[in-house]
Length: 246
Image 1: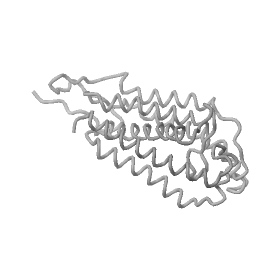
Image 2: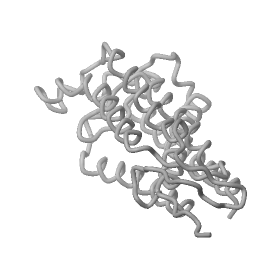
Image 3: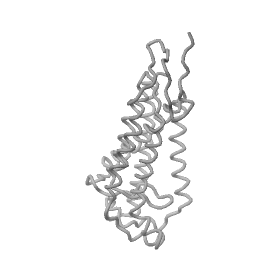
Image 4: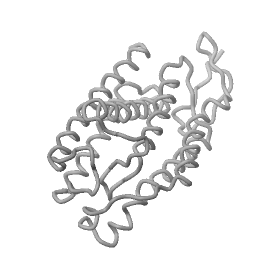
């Protein structure tokens, strides 16, 4: 399958998946917030929260994205990873787009959202995961549509992972102390306040730098006939090209 065709099919899948999740969220909001589905806090829906069911749902979502990515791209791990983050990013961006079209939410750029529920609630302004999703879409597009094969330098992928972990901390920080001291019952009356922008912004820069690193330093070049000159040091041995023998 041509790379552009693969790219378009991944986009269609992610857009459909985004609409499906947006529809579920709209139903939930109308059920738990009948007076005003646009107000998410305090977290009334937690009164019937089933952690095992939610864990299964969230794992299933990630498995679906990974499965589609592997079906679409298996030539190198870098391209498979690009297919995954691209699909994840399109799904997340269009999820918010569908919510805006169908529900009129979010109303503000810095409005808080519930991102995940396992192991505890991930909270943050919706624009933060949307920015990460946009980064994934841009980088994934560059990798998937390129005729060249890219790979991370040894420091690139660890930099991305460290940035992602720091970003995760900013999403867990608002609700974690409340959950740790009072459990789920305390969260049902909780409304988030300050967000750790001082950590999120550097974490986003680290993620961006890690992903962009595969474009910054090319220790190999691929010629028009497919001949690879030199060698690249990638985060995964399976991404190292094998030079053509004369």
